[in-house]
Image (cartoon, rainbow, N blue to C red; front, side):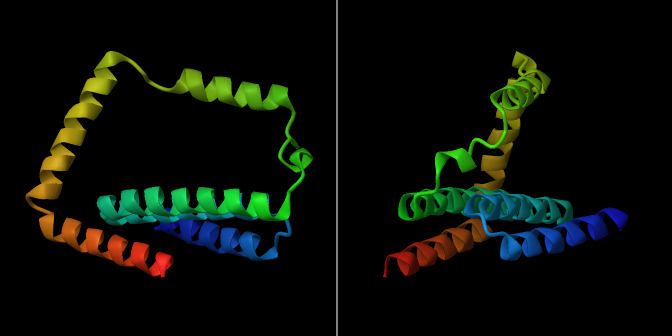
Length: 144
């Protein structure tokens, strides 16, 4: 229960960060972390498929939207390079070396992906079709 409270308070803080910041880059970062927080909440509630689709669709849409924002308002490159190169290289190195990339972990991931696909088209076929209809309506709504 305490973890849910922490996630909900993080949602509130991130939402306020999006509204109160003046930098479009920081607003994008706040919103990406916000969507990943919502994905974590959905996963903990048992909606793994919706959490995965939520993260893929909305975080991808935010990335494309931010590309258009950068092209329209011509944000200076210095705003993106606020961290020094050494710090970002250390962070990338730590993340890269901490990833478990043994062949055994890839085989397990492949089997679980196969099971996930089988479940999508057998047990959860109605939810898959409903989600595809919702995404199609959203696509047509954005085009019109």
